[in-house]
Length: 283
Image (cartoon, rainbow, N blue to C red; front, side, top):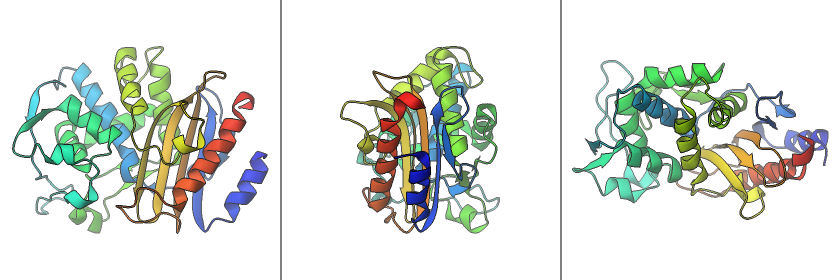
């Protein structure tokens, strides 16, 4: 299948399908509506992860110090009541089991990525702050992505404060982490970038991008989903070809509800991932 064939196939999908595919530190091989904005869902958690590690490297936070595990957060909307997460919409009971106790920021950050815990995300975000996440996006070269609030901050959402990503910006962020693991980059030291990639490699939700790859293929990635939205972005590390970036964002009728992990949008992203894998030597 050629890239034109893939575009023609995606043209028939109701809604918006965006994509960015290419090598690290090189112009993209294929893009499709790569600068179109989508609600971020859980893909914004990669920027939160980077903000945490930047704060730790600056000495502002200790990744291994225990912090209180609570379910009570400041809204991004000034003057709005504090808000809480709903456990049925989360993906990790292990974090909820610690409410009233403590956990390290490192452990919370791991759960935020590998299990996509919303509660862990808001706890980490409460320590790093939204401005630090905005700085990560800017340093990565993102042009259109914004993290304006925590997850389930409905007062902020009603006020128009939201979290937005594009396929191009997600690729830029993942690319900055991947290249930063080899040489000093704008986000963090090579050691910190390597640590973050290791967390992304441990991702347990593998029903979209990873499902389109041969078993055992290494991919450092993060996905996100709510009703009508399903995204996946990562760095694929083939044994027989150079690494490549792939980011696919979908806002369509194919994605199910917040608690539906697998849906037709997963199949679509897996199909795109498989087509890119087949072309990996020509990227």
